[in-house]
Image (tube, rainbow, N blue to C red; front, side):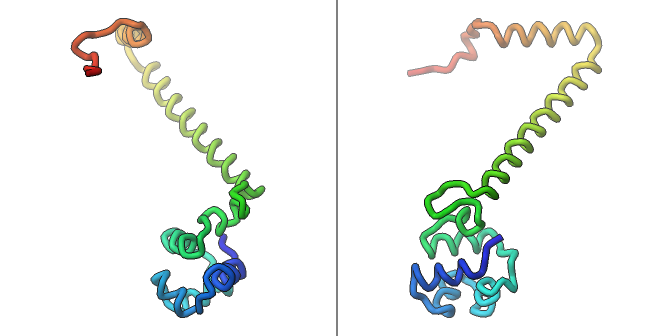
Length: 135
């Protein structure tokens, strides 16, 4: 979540823009920017966060509190990264489980064909008509 006080400080310190001028450059109304800066609206659309970051010469991750000014992950940023990595691992595990279930449901003769095909794919055999031209 973007902190309003941070937005106000960045606007004043990095750009010296009035709220009206900053709002115009960001493509939002002055009232909307006021609400962002005073934590009345805390769910800022991602495209607006990107425009704010560009205008204030920072990153969306800094605005969100996921990184510090030097680009180092904050504890919240580290937690989000760990969560995303775990989510990706879980998605891969789910996909693998689906494949195992599909394999288990194959008739025995198809399992043998599948196993042989996998062995073939793992081999170093080159198939001339599938070989890419490197010229």
